Length: 296
Picture (cartoon, rainbow, N blue to C red):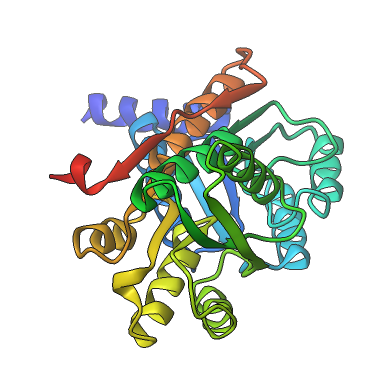
């Protein structure tokens, strides 16, 4: 009985002296995209493993919602903020508020264009675009007319994925880009924009999408038009749906970002910061090109 009482007292003392579980706030741009759902799951698994609590708030791709949610996390005095910005410019005011409150900030996938960020985790988006270009060029035998579905206008990831792709295509003079339109990383918009592209281009051999959601939208539109046999489709993210599409012969390739690993590394960095350790200011997650040959 005395031993049980002693344990209870020790637990109470630990709580009073600040040894309660530390808390990470994760503000994610949207959980409508499977990529970010995977990221969330990776973070939650690592936080649980490390004995940390993690609060996840979905901004639903709205900068104003994300700002309000981050203000809420600041009010709740989380120990570290991990932010996947909806918009790299719009997020700056929220980062500055966290800085003023003394709450360390980590960003993932998209950076903040201002404020103090302890660590940013990302991929080399130019390399991702380059790998997609190589895959599409190989699928087309170095010749053909292709279209591009672009991500959110001005987003660093979209800018770099476009540049990497276009720079690599210079090595293939037989490939011509006949259309390059924004579809905002959305499957629904990807389908609608692809429908327009197909109507305006009776001859089209390939489609490159800045992410798998748009690529899958393109798949839907191409199948509906009865042109899947003539059009090769490539995306980025390696989501479960994209992997299934490659296995089904509906896509030829995707570039694996490893969002699960990315978020796990962000949580590890958060724990290091909580423990008073320093972290690398930028971490690049390795990429991998996924084709049917890799999956077999």
